[in-house]
Length: 79
Image (cartoon, helix red, strand yellow):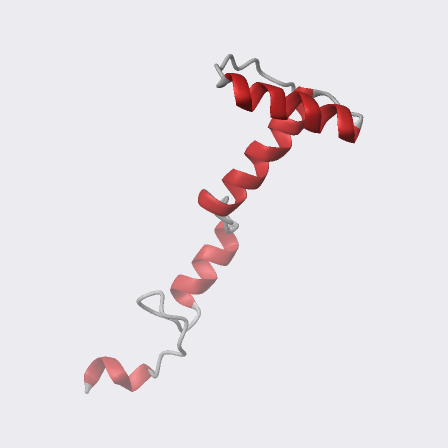
């Protein structure tokens, strides 16, 4: 997947620190920013794991209910 442009404004001090960090790491400022964004998103907006359709049906029909993951005792419904 290709990269997309993002324009943003930094405080002067942030820009200086970013330049120094990129130079010290011998990489581009853009690389440092992408890595920082990925780390931030990992902490604050983790990707949701998706299930296959088969796995979703298995959870619905395979003896589990209410999404709690506990085995469904068939007779619980009638107690």
